[in-house]
Image 1: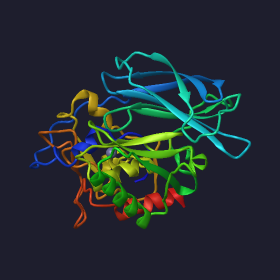
Image 2: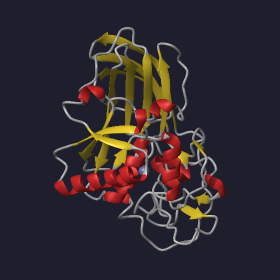
Image 3: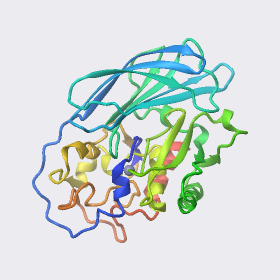
Length: 341
Ligand SMILES: [Zn+2]
């Protein structure tokens, strides 16, 4: 596990509690898995006015795999403050061809003004139904090269995650959010700070827990500006803990590059547009043992209503449940401690 740092845990996270229950079944034959489900490239970013910068990006994605494109941008200012914001479009066309889009990024509430020239760090994410289809980080104004996903830009500074809770989230869900935050606070070095009008300027980057009718999901790592964690009514404390794990910077455990030594993935029952959720993230790093008990591991029937999509290749340690959502495992805690110490 380790530095799994991804972006969105879309619909599947909401599904964990419901759909993924069923009898074990024999694994079906291996399915073909494309090497790449999407690409993003950065075309440039220009200063427009103190509250706006304009980003040009291009992307491609396989059939219906992504539902949105988000561009985040942040600038460290000479004053010591930070300017940050992001913009999202749901007008994405996933047909395998390359498309270009221009997005105006407005600074987040509490963010300092953007400075001219627009030198900083940008993230581009094609948002999928669970995992991001693809994402990349770019130095803007100094180099056009991608920095890769293990870059520390995605980490929260000083391990502090400022957060706000939407007042429209039902009280029971708000309590579950607070329970999940308390669990993280008591077991890891990550510190959660309630963001208020008084401290907003200190924290332009923050997590925003909000209700969603559709999916329980989160970006992976800090993307710059306000970033949502969506909470459905079916998303309970354990799943909210899982979503916070994404925001902290964790990918799914079975996305590790060495996962084929531990699990067999069968995509046969998975619709094509969801298969990207089983992609390996070869740019992730890790220094802990493969953890079947991670709260970031999928259950056996993830994205399937019939046969298992994930079959362990080794016996699970006694007491270990693959796909559990009770709490952070020892391995989860170890990985996050390594990331943030
Ligand atoms: Zn997830």
